[in-house]
Length: 344
Image 1 (tube, one colour):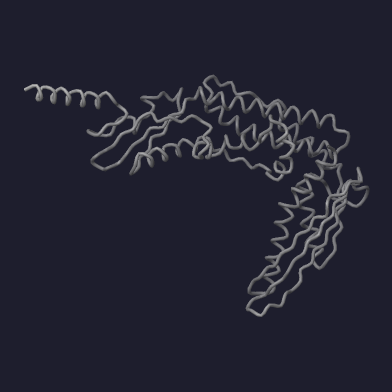
Image 2 (cartoon, rainbow, N blue to C red):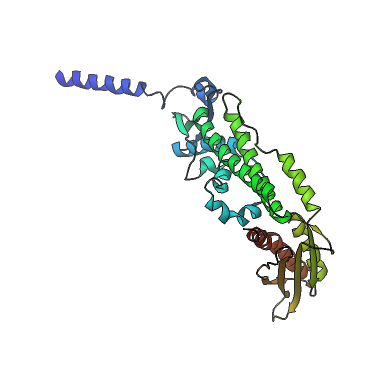
């Protein structure tokens, strides 16, 4: 008799314990929060996403993935500029651009090093379909402070870079700092777009230096800084065109009289004879840059590679494409870093 009473009491406690845990349910229809999470977590205070999966972990990852779309902002950053000045920025703890960028792409929630506190609000298992459901929740108030602090750090860097531009002793140095300002502004705009979603009071701060002001100053400078381009080699016309493109992206105009920068390049594409089908060539690129203002010269930039294709014209085209890519990426970063170092 005592054993029967004990067993009955144990079962009552067991079922009572299960009923008191609303986060996991195994019977009945789908809970309301699957379709209407705002009923549990008000939209004004929380960001929510409910998803399903064949396992609890799969459902949780899908719900986090849905939330991460909120933090994904399409920003076209010139990473070549950021990379070129990365060492300087590493010395300045206020300007950690990689950390800032991580706050407005999907990896902010889906990477192993999560920066934002995402918690599981509810879970449910539907025995009829063997499907798990998870509701993931982010507190707007907690997350807003993270973005506001990052905005303030970037704003201090923006003000610092703009002050350096105003105090610059020459136009190339001023150009360098203004280009830094533009990249920081792009990051700041992305952070602000997310902060506006999170802000409970609509108090997203404005940029301390207007974007259009920087753009006008950069355009005015471009008209005053002249780069002279001299090319040689079997593909000198193509090389001249590619270098003009790089110079334009850096922020200079091109010309012959009173140049501030002199760029000399040589590009040769040589046929190779291999005992196999197809056509092969080797391209060799050499570029020298001189800052006519300071007399400083950049370390000679060299690059070369072999290309192969079924026809002669096609293989030459592939080689030229590789040269253009090399100039627009690796050479650009070296060029930008050289200009920066010239005035440090």
